[in-house]
Length: 299
Image (cartoon, rainbow, N blue to C red; front, side, top):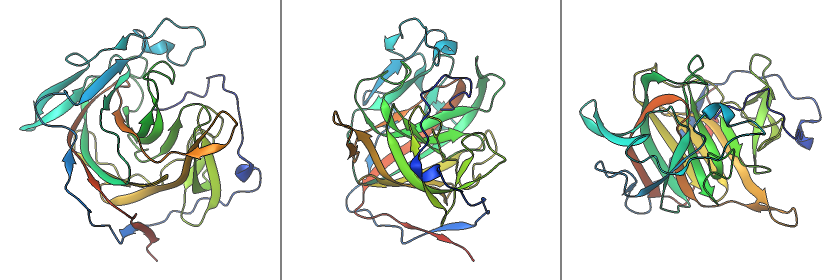
């Protein structure tokens, strides 16, 4: 999910960003102390059908997604049309064809896990993103009503899947927030925050000026090749890994209650996206863990 700069948002700048940020310095990162599974792995995709998934579609015209005035979303639907099971490279895969935006959401509710999946881009691109970088997402801690966010997605935290930005963190939902360590990178879009080990604590808050923190660096494969994503989650703390390379660590995932107190988000469903680019997913598994791995900087 990429929020367009032209959207009229209720801008909120985190207090953590009010002071000076260090300039981003590239780092070589490795993952250490990878936890062993504490139980058997569960396949979220059975290779045959989408019976374990529910699907929701946003607007018939995706160009309305971020507009104040729009038609009603299409709602429940998309299995067998937007989301299908196909054979790709000789193996079963979930194909997201892309022209209508929306999401398949797995029915399982998970906490304290290591999720692994493989994805690759297809060739098709659709308006309003046909000339933009291909975009999708792995959304975790999904909860609440389908279509609650922009009429298209459920509230969640996004492990961004977009060429050049895979592993970026995006809180999906008004006032939902995450904290990480970041530095200022003038080469990227606002808020110009990039994950850096040893950086300053920075908070990303859904639907605000500080809506994301970019990955530490690009580790995705060229278009048309399969990528492996690993997501490690314990409580409200997560690590994003792309093709074996850690690119993001987030903590304090939370959303405010009715009194404005930010309550930890520690579990939820797994949600994928359709956002204008043909995408294939396969080998989606979840296994239980009790602790997170550690990200280290190679000196």
